[in-house]
Picture 1 (cartoon, rainbow, N blue to C red):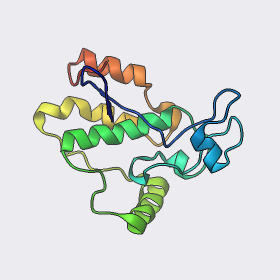
Picture 2: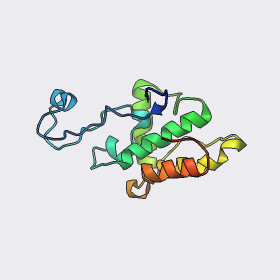
Picture 3: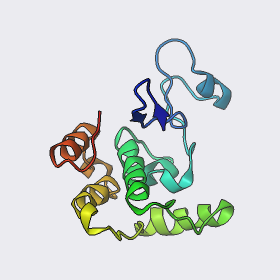
Picture 4: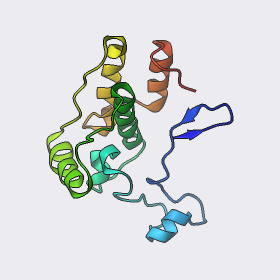
Length: 149
């Protein structure tokens, strides 16, 4: 999360990068990433989409998955999969989240129930079925769930 000059939160991800253009990115160069290739399994496991963890082809829907996890945290006021750390977290994410589709349980306050379907849409198992960030922003703004810039 970054803040702009107006103190508006901006979601950012420097861990999942792709080299772009003719010059190498510093992260891509350090990791030895081939030109035009995505990094693999770089990031925080609790937020990473299954396709990234599986080293499969991925695109923007992996960021939507991560955004869904962030929305879950914001609406539950706790870290997703907080009971797991280190190797236990890696094992849990690999065996339960990636292989069995486990997601955190929604326990929303009645005032936040409208955001539940958006959260579950974000972390869907099929990347192509996840909403776009534009659609999410429109939905969040239209229903006045959150104000998204």
